[in-house]
Length: 456
Image 1 (tube, rainbow, N blue to C red):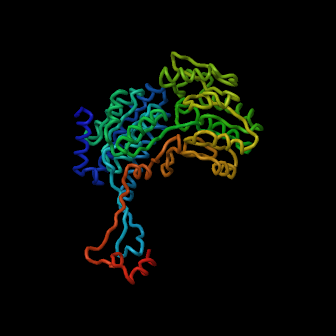
Image 2: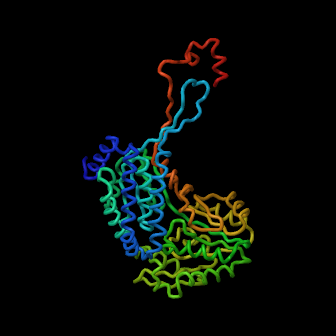
Image 3: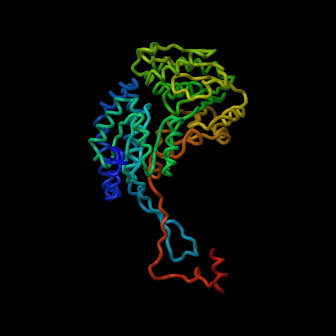
């Protein structure tokens, strides 16, 4: 049955079949237009993000606009090299044929973005999909309503609707959208809906990239520089009020430095945001009443709040909160927090930290503060989508590093070249001469079989 959604997708497939997006000049033209539109809308982007999440102008630029601009520039700078076919060695028995890998677009792809970084996580994968030569349906989150409308304006200004279409439907319409066939689905969001996306994709055997989340541990050893560790932990945890998929989700600190580190975290928070966080324009808010109620539940049921714990439902404000020695089986330690609440555990033997991490679902990120050799030793005993040694969160901004999850925290990688490959089909192609042909592979084999065995 034909519906408005299927009609639009049919128009996009017809446009893709015309071959425009396979031309590198065409891709570059629209990437440049997108770059200019993002630069021109910097102030509007900051206003939208402040309205949705109370992000400051500076945080909006650092964590969203700047990352998008860097990704578009990276795709433009390296587009011709990434799109070029690559010759690879050919086995001797196939002589005189040659082997090539041809990168071709996948077709019409779906990009689904979340509400927490609604600008970055919509346009960053979009840039990779456009660079790779696809047509794109972009589904931003309606929860970040102001940014969603801005994205629709920007995309409508830059792209013809048969090339890139912003889908603004509700949950029921999104379900109908997911029932349609796509050539790839790229989803960023929670694991619960990620399973739904994967189930829907399975009906068409559609490949998926799932950027999910999980409980990312932050380990502070006794060899850490506590001042640096505290500053980076506070920044990484309170960025977007903790509503970051790679925020430190719980803190594992060596017993010898625990009290000193917690004091430095308190001091550093005040230094960065002031004593009256509620009046600070630099401190974001929780996105919705539902999310606020969930976080308030963690605070109300906590047994040992050592700092913070204040909240204001009318303003959706939650103060940075440290919870000491939580029950490892409590909801606080089973569920991704996604807010400015930091549970604190202590250890004396680093092996127990690795055992604790390994007993749970693989996280999206892992952070270690201490000697690099000890950090690499811990990485060698655990698994995570990404990691930082003596830092938090910033690995997402390293464009030459692949970003993505493992296990329950996601599948697939993107950023830079990895985005280009994610949205491309790597087409293995063998080129043989028109006339020249070795008879070795054809029966009857006779004496030539011995030589064929050696070549194989």
